[in-house]
Image (cartoon, rainbow, N blue to C red; front, side):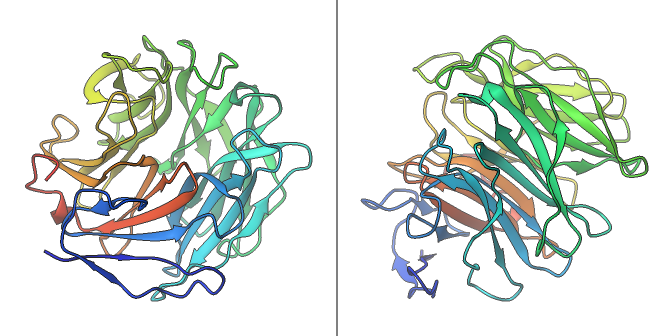
Length: 372
């Protein structure tokens, strides 16, 4: 078996020669991990570009076929110099543009960007702005672009309550409204997510340009960073990151909630069979109706990064495969499926300093029932 990993050079972003590897599923010393068979992984950016600390990255496919990503970067997670950076990969090209600042307020740091092109071409950039010492002092801001993410509007407030945050892409509901997954983080502790931290959704009407808040989803340890899919007109499912701390535990599981009225109200959170290390996850609906869940298959560590597919409406996820594994962490995945059917997963590694890009077909996961 041969897999290819590509890297970007400093300065001119030229493609290195592809390195041929005769093994997969383990880590080379000092590398960001190797992919499984049928999965291509490239490094997008590392410490050689602005914003040494990068967490997380969000990606969208634009109407012209370009890919556009936004990450927040600075000297550290809680540093004032944190700002949002945007980069473009033009269709049919292999070189990402040098990142440019797209949001940077004086005296405050930005975080958790979510970039998404809505029907009709408007590009949304949701993000967090922190007004105090921890994320519990944050509000959700947004900008829009009418020219394919080349220029951006002034920022405006989406959720003013302190502690409100965003992480995953919105979805378009069958009635035309948008559903934005958000969460309310409490506790004011950078090392512990309080048990009253909860997920919820903001329902946006493109007709009235208003956001309406749903009820809040509570669970035993708290939950945050929901990701959602719509199965039918009335039935939606969301998976959420668990709350708590980062110490080793034996009962840390992903949380699930459901709506049976089109996303207007939500059940309380129920712990699932999926382990969760108090780490982010992604859950998206593929073009054929199958569901993709991307998560760390571990209660206490952000490795491996696993992909699981359901073909029965989130009843079971029998098709499972490691995207990447090794002696590193693989955190904050963001997943999309582009119009050509390819699945793209961004994740962060190397002590949150490197953005990686995995690309694969659904068939690389279907039929698999283990990490191999």
